[in-house]
Image (spheres, one colour):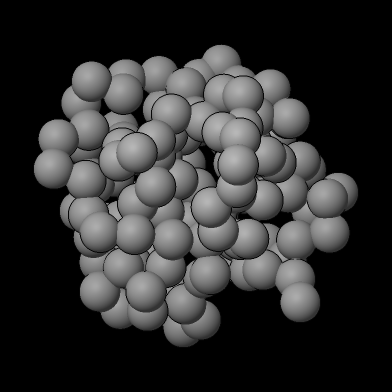
Length: 130
């Protein structure tokens, strides 16, 4: 069963790149949200969310991630150039992929999230908890 992915990113070209990577791999992209308001308007809850930290409305990425987890038990992967800004990540946020990223890093992180724990950590995914 294909997972539904939400992209929370305010930089247009980065968001389009992520959408292309995710959709080409056969995942369903629920949408692209540049801020907290856009996420709150979404009716469907994603299985997995790729979340940047600093968005159009400020450093709201962690709050958005927390809301998605509370609303529907979404698994969160942060995609950020500033991983040191991730303090107190919400439950079900498994880690981060640092920008700039490769398509392989994004896809292996999604596969890791979708399938659960594996024997080997995917290259490019940094876990919060071992």
